Image (cartoon, rainbow, N blue to C red; front, side, top):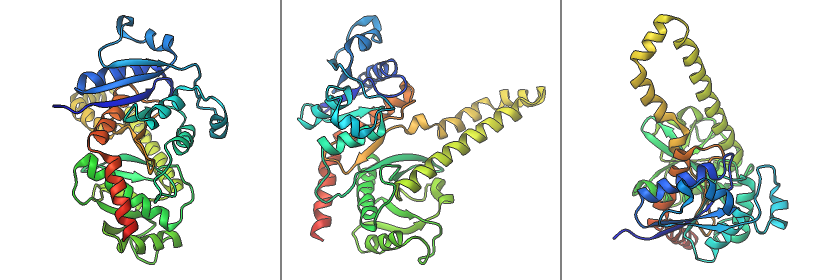
Length: 336
């Protein structure tokens, strides 16, 4: 029998709001038996995006008067907008009515509300944003992707443990490999916090394999890549920019003459497969690890397909008891 999973979705977040969230949720419940989703947001806007204005089975609506915009400051959100779709969805998760929350909304506000309402585990100083990145062999998990711009060694060690648990849950890997992102593989290179984190990780019961350079991020040789949020976010944005640059060069060159256009037509299936492998939509859904709950961030401009992928990851995390496993591993780490 398929286990029941209840997800609260902030339907108003992101660039497209209900127009994407509603259709993605309808697709998700058709794909996952036992999945129940409640859409938090303005009821009128949500109903307008329902097929025939009728609710499918296992999909419900919780009306919220307020919406957190991308321009709202986290500090302002904490003081105000207590009736927002994002906040009420997280409140519902914290109260036990739902197993997880998915939102495409304001990242800073989502993290701030998550920390205030769900709170971090006692052994975790700072939550981290963990996302999957495409590689030659599938994909790897990378954290932190922007929540903490400056980290101490103990924070990086905590990120490594959390990333290892996530990879083992989502990918069913017994002992995920872990590396610290650094400017070289030599032991003497790197900041003091990175070098100290390496010493700490080598002493833990984790599959720590040393440093990894940025040029090897996409090799697929490592399951979990650890760095501070400043480095991780720069690496993410730089790789996205390179991908767009290469795609633009391809469009320009393939459209340069009648011959290149003919080559494009002949190579279209191959090009399609390549683009699918690097399409961020297929890897959408970042976990806010370290919180005592499952909080997943969808990219703000994700399509229905991308948003549905974020829900897919959330379902797996809930059914594989990610939070319980993380809590167990953190307790063992404290004991050791």
